[in-house]
Amino acid sequence: PNRHHPDFLKSQLLNALFGGYFGSRLMSNIREDKGYTYGIHSFIQPHQQQSAWMVTTEAGRDVSRATIEETYKEMLALQKEPVSAEELSLIKNFMIGSLLGDVDGPFHIIERWKSYILNNMPPDYFYTSIQTIKDTTGEELQILAQKYPQTRVELYETVLGGGPSLLHSGAVGLYLGTQPVAGLPARRLDRLHLVPSAAKTHPLVLIDGVTEADLRAHRQIVIRDSAPSRMANGSWLSAEQRFTVDHLHTALGLIEAGMGFAWLPQTLVQSHPGLAMLTLAEPMTDEAPIHLVSQAAFAAGAAGAVLIEAITAQFAVNKAGSAPQNK
Image: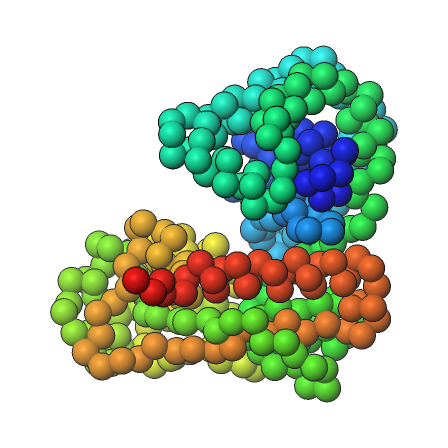
């Protein structure tokens, strides 16, 4: 449901219970009990007509299928049994505390009101939100879980040719990445900027004007192509010493531990305070277009069309936010 739907506020409460905070069911099961991942979260991404209910995590290849299955199990558990009074009280306190934190100070209040105005929400929406959270019962959340979500989305993290390979095989209906997919039309959403990066304590970071010879003298962290053929190469690959891994989170762990440098998306480096871009003697930034490619049958379906719209809209918002402002 979108923001104006009567189910929206209750769905936010259901989402928090499912995977919207550290003590959620997804975190308790998949992180704390199973140990499949460091973190797993769900969130509702609202749009004008519909909303997308998303689950995001990073898990190893050997437990990725089990992670998806446990996520579905938690969905079914919400549908089969009402939430206990103790768990409901805990999640209500969390939600109300989060809302009150959003209006702590004049700047937060302005941001909250700006959001209401831009989305055409009623003036009493803040108070209505708190009252709805207080009044919602465990039985109502069970009914809501049976109603939403009816569409299931499985997300695969791939490297280089892995995504196009899955799309061609019919295993997935939608691909988002930098590799071209033969025979299918692609929608270009943005460009990915890859930069050489390392931990802030790495010797390369201390060099003002890193050369190719400097890079060759240090260990490079490389993420392996996940396509069955494993034939594609990504960016610069000339270091004599390499660690090759299967997943991005594994690469990040090695880089942050000072084990080597890697070519990473610039936005990813900027979001990790322990990483730094290397200062190069000559420009070596690698760029690639980000494509959105779908099977015709997937795009023609209602759920597929909504997901494509949500992804496209989010990229548009990101580009608008990063564009230089005229003064």
